[in-house]
Image 1 (cartoon, helix red, strand yellow):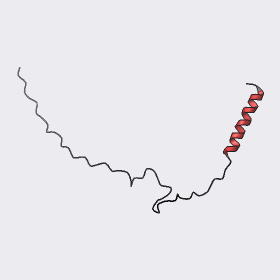
Image 2 (cartoon, one colour; image 1 turned 60 degrees about the horizontal axis):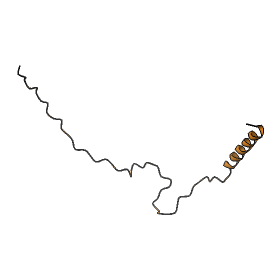
Image 3 (cartoon, one colour; image 1 turned 45 degrees about the horizontal axis):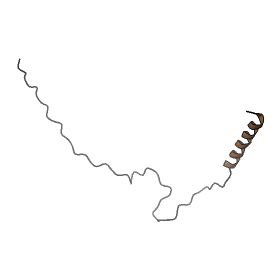
Image 4 (tube, one colour; image 1 turned 180 degrees about the horizontal axis):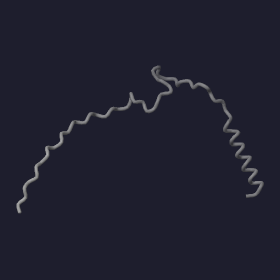
Length: 72
């Protein structure tokens, strides 16, 4: 890579970094317009809104079986 190409690449990198820092960053974000009950920002996942698993029926273990005698 030639010296001129390296300088162009470095200048392009500096320009990108300079533009990345531009812009006004608000200290507080206003909630969106909409329902009055909306809470912004909300946490995710919200355990209050997650569906709960259905209770599984209790299974009883099968009764143990006695070994059958074998005939010789």
